[in-house]
Length: 560
Length: 30
Image 1 (tube, each protein chain N blue to C red):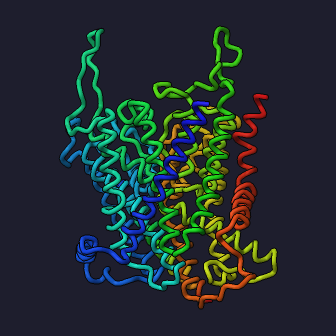
Image 2 (cartoon, chains in turn blue, green; image 1 turned 180 degrees about the vertical axis):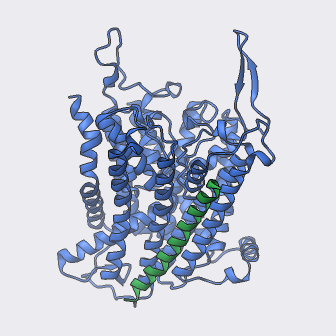
């Protein structure tokens, strides 16, 4: 009962908060009818962007600007981490990282994934944490919001989609930075450390000297959660008592995980001028999210098989292995967090996902496979848009009419691009998993064999491709093959799912608007919502069910 | 040296993505 109430308050409460946030995000990203103060901010952004970047861009110019900017931040963060031993703010004398790990980490933070094959407190100087990683957590997330704003403008019928460099500043300074300041302050008040002093040295009661890592944690954790980044300051992420000390910071973190992805849907609806359409999309995402949470809580209420048969071990409160009981109910930091963090491409962890019961472990994977049940900041809505194009196409075929979306005809070109976007996600996950499952690249790094070991490999590629960054763990993933393979997947599947929806929006914007008639498919009612829901489930199941059957489902059946 | 190779690999991916963007525009005009 407590779990249901807690989950309802977190998800329902954040859904309510996301409505005004969506309004504010629209104000930030689409400055129409603004006051003098906001006008002055806009002038400043234009000055910073410079004269060539001030003009509106076509979808291709916008995309190329986005790629150039991300290539530059990749190179800068790579250089900062490679040279951290020569840079300031390194009181604990951290050295440079190995080359493939540098590549993986720079790719990971540039792509808003934050998959971590290193341990932050062991490997990174304060300079690297702040100016190579935390900085990227702002601009990588802002890139997603900018891409969504551009796509929405295209769908509103504008051939010019705005200026990327101005959008990037709007998303960073008017959306993410103010939110991060509020959340960082609340986290610091909740006991999360915020200091530039070196590690604390303590002497234990046994007389042993203990080095306790600390740093600017509150600032790091705030944007880690709000920007669906997920990369922790410490290796154990949000299970570490300095990242997440109390029940309240735990609840606050979960709200921060889903807040901006939810607000992005409302922002999209406002920019395209169809808030009811946004409500239909929001409803579909919410239904899928609630189903996954309910499934995870249900399957996690069974005791873990790891303790089955042990004498004198009673498991009356479900699977307690790998959970943080500091927060009360094990479901709060376990099942609920695992679904929220994987539905939104966040990837921070509140429990050990490797210890989840097999079918509970499937729920986070489903979240990352669909990658659109709110999804990443901005990009989750881009992924859902691809499902919408497929759903509209299928609905058109059923009734024998040319499919339309927001008064534009959806033709073969748009459907081909949407299918390509859908194909790449499955391709990277399934091909990567297959290669690592049959070669020493994957086999030599496993700590478990059989279906569970397969799940570990499947989860790692799923997390990289979905730009999630959470780890199933139980995998020795800091090796050259893992670092290079997941690094490539993260970069490619960060930007291909941005390129293709923008191309579709550009293509639709170039068409003449069609007149609405009684035969036009409404994208604002329950029928559309059900059609979209069925499309998401059908495409997801057809793509990923065989892999799920070999991993978590086989493991579940093995224990029956 | 090897570290520089990894940096070049990352930047090469961005060049590839830019080429892909150009190619997608070409498909649009087919």
